[in-house]
Image (cartoon, rainbow, N blue to C red):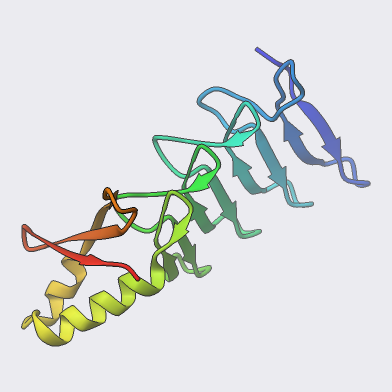
Length: 165
């Protein structure tokens, strides 16, 4: 197990802890490789890296916190690309814990606009009950033979596909 590199504020409190591998890359198995702190000692952010690449398969790779300790944002990465197949890859929170914004990415491609446009079109055309709009869930992007991308959404158990321009 590698020992952390520690940096401190002038007041003597820890500023950040970094874990590096023998190649001097940020790296730590199953725990954050970068931990940054506020001057008051509370955690500011934690970042997961494997061999210098932002990566975490079982949760967000980066979590930022407000100074009071509440979560500020969560970002999901796989192999240094912002990515999440079953929901937003970026989630921003207000200090009260409510969600202020969400962004959808697959393999580093920002699909937020396409997702929101499609969701709005669906809500006008196909969804009768206002609560059903919350059931939308991005499943995955499939690259087909001619390099077009197809976004698949699940609405009440039915898969609906559309092409991205």
